[in-house]
Image 1 (tube, helix red, strand yellow):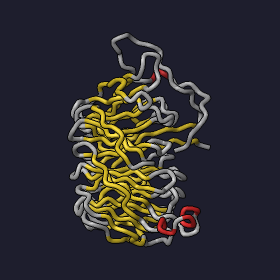
Image 2 (cartoon, rainbow, N blue to C red; image 1 turned 180 degrees about the vertical axis):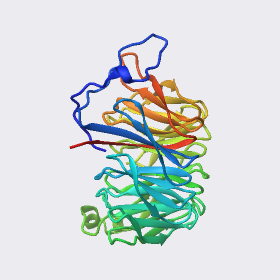
Image 3 (cartoon, helix red, strand yellow; image 1 turned 135 degrees about the horizontal axis):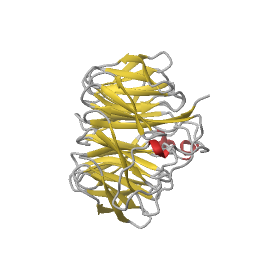
Image 4 (cartoon, one colour; image 1 turned 90 degrees about the vertical axis):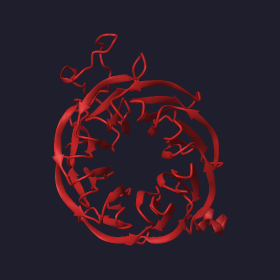
Length: 396
């Protein structure tokens, strides 16, 4: 996702504005350059489609046919490509963002669930829940080049920012697998950690020193120290740091699901779906600082670039909550559509998008307004939207 400077006003006359209680007010958004493009890609769990939303003009752009059961999406940080995981058809669809068309389909293994793309935009790793494997994709050749075994029913997968470690949460076996991916193409298993029932979401610190994994069935979060590089300063100071090791098992609320890492990596906020709360974890001390009530069935979280605001989608309350990190309290909530779940912030963060999994729409919340954040409009998508990602770029 590319940060840009803005030089052109959005043509608001074409926008589907909402008539709010206070009447129509002028909408304030950044200005955009003539060659600037910004699209949101929403996977529709039913129907085998992806909805493309034009975020310059705030309107649906088109609907693309992909594989069956699309469930996850990732963007290439270098090229204008977007990748869709098709769980039911065992494939990954490649979308060319420049013209919003399906450019290729890559076969993987059974029931793929999650995807992560490396910083160079050259490789992707896909967990296959039905075959207990991770597929390695060459994104330039658009094909699977290797696969490696995991624990049972692997779900979330992420690459550490330094590109050395691949971490996989195995839901079925309640374990976490850590791989070395410096020797491409086949990942090498480095360590396995068990006793993490329902291993689910994860967060990896910006310096790649630790991974945190939500254990949904145990009401806890694992803190794992990731092995440092042999020639690094930590390795020279402490040779033991070259080994992956368990740091702590942190007790949080009931049924922790999503982990939200602050951009400065100082804290993680845990969405406790079963107890309607969020737990705050210090990544430095590996301690749970506090737990706060937030809403019914919190599903996902996202934090602003200034580390000050946490947005949490409450799937059981048809709302999104705004939590002030600096003040340590919930500031407000905004109504959305039914069962809000996946979220994304636009570049520059003037709007927050929320996929309403219980309906066929995406709620658009204006985050910056003199009267505070408010619902701006609802954009139609397909049935049961379940994941969303934004790609922004300039045309030549």
